[in-house]
Figure: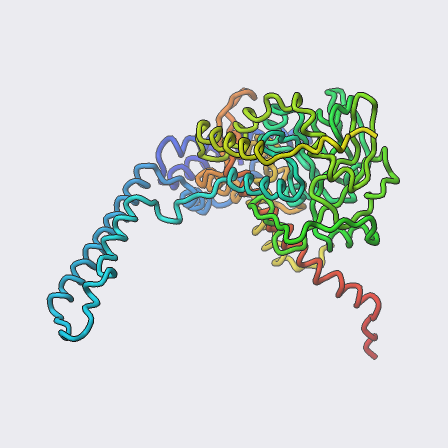
Length: 396
Length: 124
């Protein structure tokens, strides 16, 4: 087995691929890199080069089978897609024409009893034409895509109802349900990173209740990394030592899982507002459950009464940080104080909406103008109805 | 040693492969060989290159990942990264997985407690 034999394998594979030259070259190039990486990895371990190559070829498997797999995975060209769509459209139009023709023939061939109501002349008779007209203006249902933006908006609407927070004006917290956390080590996605870069006062919080706020260490980059049993949470600069903002700790989980994980009795319970349900794609892991959220308090407040809460609110401030210092809050206070506090810190969200909109729109097809219009409308509505809870001072 | 038989383990692994690859890419861009190593390390299962590369191409075709060629290492290397659609898919899959796990837990844990408290008598 030698390099030449690997090349022979690639040649054989490419021959069987039945794809365009460009695609074949891309696949061969990728496999070449795989082989080179493998050699780099294994050769220093004093393994025979031929043994490594043989191992890699076994790893790739039979060239014929691999070629078949690649062919199945090959992208369909836009031209083919267009042709398929045109063919489908043609079939649909032919079917519609056939139905219309059948109806016409049926009406001509069958004369109804004079005394009977003329069903064929009723509005239903115009149904095929009406359907055709609708089909021309509306895309088929399967092509209508629910954007993540829609889901997020619904999610935020639910948050507004439940917590009184103003997500449109002050998106201070980006919430990821625990279902989005990876089982072992959470690695922020590019989208998370983008969000964080765009809005330094956005916090991404997630995780199991018992896993938050167990440890903290400062990194050289100035970011906090929280460690606990197998789960590392990379937090945003929002958590930096200056604690400019209110510390929010949000986590979602079912009552059952919380109970199973913590074995703690219900205490300091605050019921979720009656009838409250979250409906969003982002939150679908919770659907069908009695959703609850527990307040987790930082280590700095280990005796916080809300630490063992089983049924609480959606957003909670565990402490307010003001120029006077940190002020721990109990569950009820924090629930009501949060919107007021967020409202009084508008300077922290000065450029948030615009950047955040860009981040949100990244996953959707909503144009910037449409998004801004939507945001503006919602904001206007919110301003009309929002009454800041100024009487609830964040300081104590 | 796993209590699952080999076939069940392989089936479970195969069924989770898409999500595992998306999970690896959620961390940032990776190339084929590094994805293979990540998945093997995390799962303890061997993923053949002959399965991985067609899978990557399928995910790319489906628009869940996107590939770019770079030559930082001195040779052309194909890097994969998650698209917004891939990220949504990943989130949805993990959410489904979590929900299923929670339901399984609600069934299994009480049963496990029962079995622990009332062990079956030894056959005589």
